[in-house]
Amino acid sequence: MGEVIVITSGKGGVGKTTTTANVGTGLAQLNKKVVLIDTDIGLRNLDVVMGLENRIVYNLVDVVEGNCKVKQALIKDKKHPELFLLPSAQTRDKTSVAPEQMKKLTDELKEEFDYVLLDCPAGIEQGFMNAIAGADRALVVTTPEVSAIRDADRIIGLLEANEIKQSQLVVNRVRMDMVSRGDMMSVDDVCEILAIPLIGAVPDDENIVISTNQGEPLVGSDCLAGQAYSNICRRILGEEVPFLDLSESKGVFGKLKGLFHK
Amino acid sequence: MALADLFKKKSSGNVAKDRLKFVLVSDRANCSPDTMKLLRDDIIKVISKYMEIDPEGLDIQITETESENRNGRVPALYANIPIRDMRHSSR
Image 1: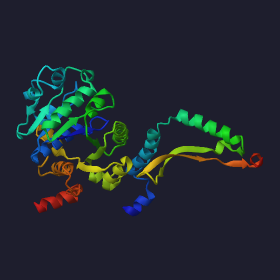
Image 2: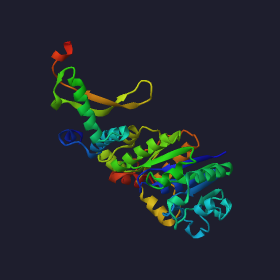
Image 3: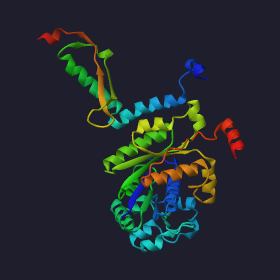
């Protein structure tokens, strides 16, 4: 029996979809059978980040309403034969699906898949309630900014209230140059404030933008963000992986050093 | 750099951390400024029955305290109530 993981944040634009795409792809690279569900009804995005936007026939609402079988709606990834996407509906709204229906769907999918990842919409309304309905555990994504952290704190409270036992933190878009100047909260600061276990910190890396442009998640690639996501995936499987030193090759000194090392 | 920092104002990262800690405590306690005002007035009323206090100097806030039986910190109501005269209390 597989596990259902919801990727959530409260605030929009902190990297839920990017995290879902990369963690899902990374778990598939580790030979797990994975399905990603975009639960943001009306604002479909995970398909473009995965580069699968041209293959959509059926969507989440079609499945829930019984217009098609689950299997018919699942889109196979371009590279990984054991990775699938269930896209969201673009022309409907959040009320098209109820929490009980989502739970039934995820219960069914985890019979067959090792991991069911749910990309949660921003906010704490029905879309959020739908996304967490069937979740066994949660990844809470935040950035080292006051607004994102405050919203993450609210989300952590709601996850607890809804009896999701295990919530782990992803600190995204960390800029070590700013942290070392004292102009950004460090990963430790964020963990201290939110008081849930850290599962990974991801640096602010321009390769993320490039990979999103191309519709190919960068997990597993050579860059720091790619490694950070791989490590998160291994930690999800229960492996103990030391945390990356994100200060690598940042700033003029680091860049120069990097030049000479390569 | 470190020496210069001593004379400069607090770094913005630390400002952010301190502000967040403060705002999250009241977020978590789910206690609005209005509620705090009502609570404050009631505390003054009750304590004044027993002793003369200085309502201007009264300071109440929701903070955090280390918990012994649960891991980590829990919210706590902190009140500092200056007493002017104990004479009521002897009765």
